[in-house]
Every structure is written in structure tokens, then in C-alpha cells.
Image (cartoon, rainbow, N blue to C red; front, top):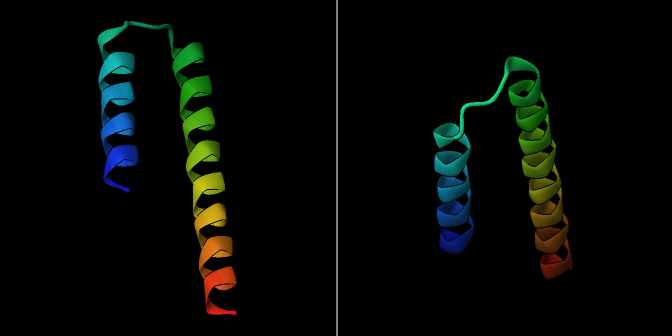
Length: 52
């Protein structure tokens, strides 16, 4: 988990360092939201499998 947080932090820092137009920024945000949702779903599935 710690590694993932560090990676996302560095990615956010890199993305904010680069000036992009609003459309690209919106696309990046949607991608990031989708990515986090997929991660949460994978974690939930992993926990459910562990509990079974």
C-alpha cells in the first residue's frame, strides 16, 4: 500500500508540474478516478477471497 501511495504521489507531482490544457487535465482526472476505482474493486475482491 505504501508503495502505491508513493507512486500516486509522485505521479500527481509530475502531472501538476506539467502544464496541460483543461481538456487534457479533465481526461487525466477521469483516468485517475477510474484507476482508483479499479484498485478499490481489486482490493475488495482480494479481501473477500481471503475471508472465504
